[in-house]
Image (cartoon, rainbow, N blue to C red; front, side, top):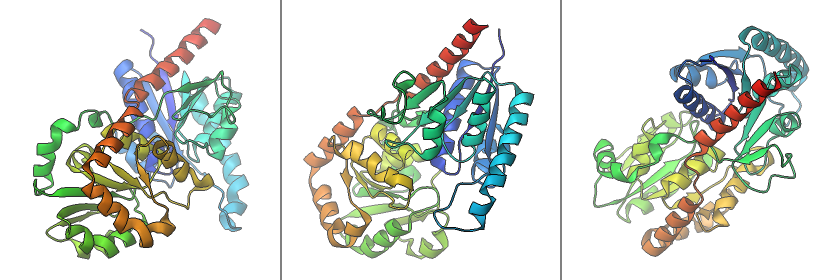
Amino acid sequence: MTKYKFILSGGGTGGHIYPAIAIANELMLRFPDAEILFVGAQDKMEMQKVPQAGYAIKGLWISGLQRKINLQNAMFPFKLVDSLWKSRKIIAAFKPDVVIGTGGFASGPLLQMANSMNIPTLIQEQNSFPGITNKLLGKKAHSICVAYENLERFFSKNKMCLTGNPVRQDLIDIDSKREQAIEYFKLDPNKKTLLVLGGSLGARRINQLIEKSRTNIISQEVQIIWQCGKLYFEEYKKYQAHNIQVVPFIEKMDLVYAAADIIISRAGASSVSELCIVGKPVIYIPSPNVAEDHQTKNAKAIVDQGGALLLKEYELDTVFETVFKELLLDTEKQKQLSANCKALARPKATQDIVNEIVKLIEKKKGVR
């Protein structure tokens, strides 16, 4: 049996890292003796998260361009040349069958070099509006797995495959875990649970909202699991109380989703894909600080199909409490949102992406 080798690159945020790890796990299920190497940005969170998932990783000296003029931007050309050279060395030494990119700084030079060395490449675009790295890589990539329809204006239709975003497989059947989840988080089964998600680092504006609205929320017989992010935990842990659990990070995502009745979340691509599978009523509060306003576009793709609610940050002080109370009291609305977002879920996304990788391997074999 042929022993396959794969290089994966994706990082900077959990939204790029976790899809890459999900793809790696599925590749190992499919090819148990495969060799897998990750390539990331040397000072980003993938350098910790990937080894924790059991995979080797090499770092590149690369970062993104900043919007303002600074020393980091002046260093960018040097970092890019260094990363292209190092990528070439990594690829030449490892000899991968396919190179896979899930977005983030490091995937740019790595896949660019793989394309120039005639190695099959696949990119996985998580957003409804592609970032600059994937737009550039898409011109040469052999296969492009997308999570949203209508991306023909960015990528060649012949290369695209609509797969959805990779998600944790333990989210597929969370309904059966509700009792376990209530016990794990020591919740009152007679109260509704609001889950607040700001991403792994946290979201300042969402934290400010919950800080301001927490007393009002609790007065409606609601308990809160508040994931404030590791950047903000020291600031907000003082609000830990009988009906409020403040945590920097949540390890057991399947259980916290099972426990939740209503969810407030940012609208990163991976979060949106996960929340469609989870199928709970969601109020999205997109970050306005991401490139090309990705998060609003991600959320709108669900909201326009009746699968979630959306509030802009500037609306929070005036309408949040009314919108939340109306949703909490309207069980029919909750059921409708759940059903509509579940209809948009793609639970087999990871398997479908690996099927596309297998096609590239078979095509490569046919060329030889």
